[in-house]
Image (cartoon, rainbow, N blue to C red; front, side, top):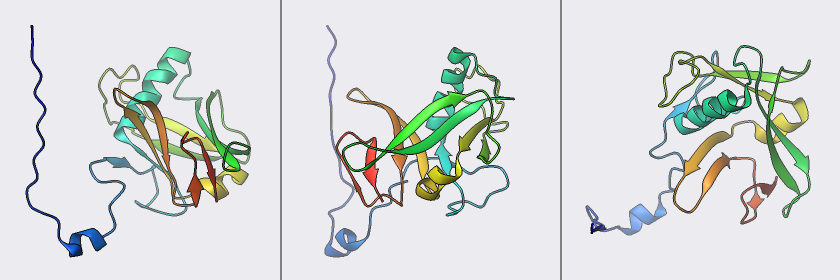
Length: 165
C-alpha cells in the first residue's frame, strides 16, 4: 500500500498591496511567439509549449503533414455567450487566412514531428476576435483540453468554449 501526502506552503502573507496587483494569467507558462512577430503583439496570436506539444501529437495521429496542413482556429456565432471557439485540422490554408508558424526547432516530449514547426490558420473574420490571444493546453485530473486566453473576451460561460466580445 502506498501513501500520498499533500502539503501547501506559503512563503509570506499577502498584503493589501499584493491584492491590488492584477494577477498575471500567463504566470508559469512558456509562451511561443510566431515566426516574424513581436511577443505579446495585438496583431498576432501565441501558443504555449503545452499547446505546441498537443498540436504535434494530434497532427501525427490524424496524419496531417506539418509542411502542408495545420490547426485551424475560428470563431462562430452560437454558444451560451453568443460566440464559440472552433478548432480543427485543415490540410492547407485558405487564400485569405493569416498563417502563424510556431516551434521550429523546439522539441517537445513524445514529439512525432522531430521538432518541425506547426502552423495555425485563422480566417480574417475570426481574427478580429482572436487577435492577441494565447492558446494553451491544460491536462489535469479534472480537465483536459485547449484553453483560449483571449483579451477580447468580455464575458465567458462555464464551458470555456463560449464567449462574448
